[in-house]
Figure 1: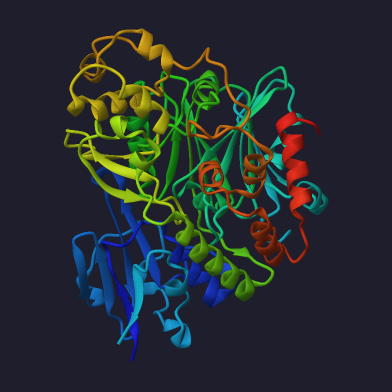
Figure 2 (figure 1 turned 120 degrees about the horizontal axis):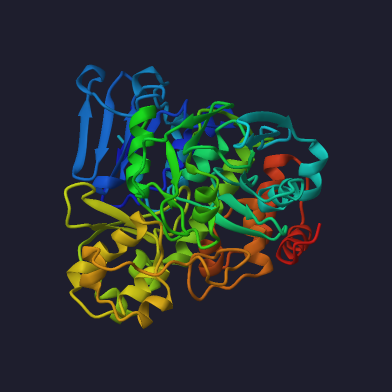
Length: 112
Length: 396
C-alpha cells in the first residue's frame, strides 16, 4: 500500500496541503477534516506536519526529521482543533494524492 | 450564501458593547466581488471612522498567494487605507464565520475582540497595562488556549502586529486600535466554506502553484528582498517560510538572542533596510527590530536622521520615532519597490498578497479563471481591474 512521505528540509510551511486535503475529500475549504495537520511554533522557528495514515499510524514531520508513531504515542497539537486521531486517515486520494500535486517544493511525495 | 463566502458581516460598537450580525446581500458580492472593495462599501456606512477586516474570495483558498485577509482603517473624514493580514491569519479569518468585521466607537477601558465559529465577544483586559504587542499576543493565546489563534495587537506605536510579526501595517491600524482602547483582535477559523466546482478548482490551483514555482526558482527568504550589503548584516537567520498557500517563501526566522521568543519571523523588509544602514553591531540588528515591533513601530528614514546606533535601539535607551505622522499609502504593499497599482488593488479585492503580486507579477487571467470555478460565474480581468481602479480612487 502506498503512503505519503514528507521531506522537512524542503517544506516552506505554506500549509496548503492541509486545505487541499479537505477540499479533495469533502469539497469545501476547511482545516478541520484534513488528514494533514500543520503545526507551527513561531517562537521557536518550528513548523511541520502530522499525517494520519491508514491503519492508525501517525507521521510526525518535524524540522529535525520524520517519525512514525501509533496514535497513543503522541501528545500535544492544537488544543481546540479536532485532534488528528479523530480525523479520517489519508487514503492517498485513491492513488493520486492531491497534496503531492499541489506542493510547490515536493516536500510531500508518494511512497511505497 | 454566495460561494466562497459565509455571506455575513459582524458590526461591533465598542462604545456601547453592541455586537450585531448582518446578512450581506448576494448582489453586493456580485457587484464588488469581495475583499477591500466590499470593506470599502461597508466602511462608507459609518460616520465617525472605523476599523475593518475583510476577506477576498480567494483568501484561504488553495491558489498561489491566497493568504491575505484585508485590514482597513477609515478616518473620520472618510478616507480609507488598507493593509494585508498574512501568514496563516487570512485562512483563519476566512473560516471564522464572518467575511467582514466593522469596528466602531471607543471602549471605556482596554478590551479585545475574540471571533470564532460565527461567535464574537468583547473581552475586558484593563489589567493588561503593558505597551508590548508581543505580551498582548501571548496573553490572548494563553487566555483562549489555542496556539492557532491569530492575534492582531496594538501597542504604543502606529503599527499593529500579527503574533510576533510586524511590518505589514503602515496604514496606522495600531493607532486606530489604540485610540479605541482595542488591545487586540483575535480570531480562529473552525468553519467550512463551499466551492462551486471543487475538483476543477483544485486542479487549476495545483497547475498555478507549479507554474509559479518555476517562475520563482530558488529565490527565498527576506534577504532575497534586500541589497547584498543589507542582507549581509542579518545574522542568525535559520529557516525560510511562506505564508499560507504561497510558493514564494519570502519570510525568514531569525534568532532574537533571548530565550522567549527564541526566534521571530521576519517580514518587515522596509525596517530591515533602514536598520541595516545604522552603525552598531550586526548582532543587535534583530534585537533592534524586535524592540521596534514590540512597541508597535516600524523603522523609517527618520530613524536614519536620529543618529541612534543599533546598539542604542536594541537596549532601549532612547525613544525611537514612530510612523504616526508619516504619509501613508492607500494600499500598503509591505515592500519597498512595489508601488500601488490596479493589479495590487485587484489582489486586495481577491485576497492575494500584494508582495506576491508585486514581485511575481502573476497573470490575473489565471486568477479570474480559478475564481470563476470557485463561484460558478465568469469574472473578467477587466472587471476586477476596474474595481481595483475605483478602490485606488476611492470611488463608490
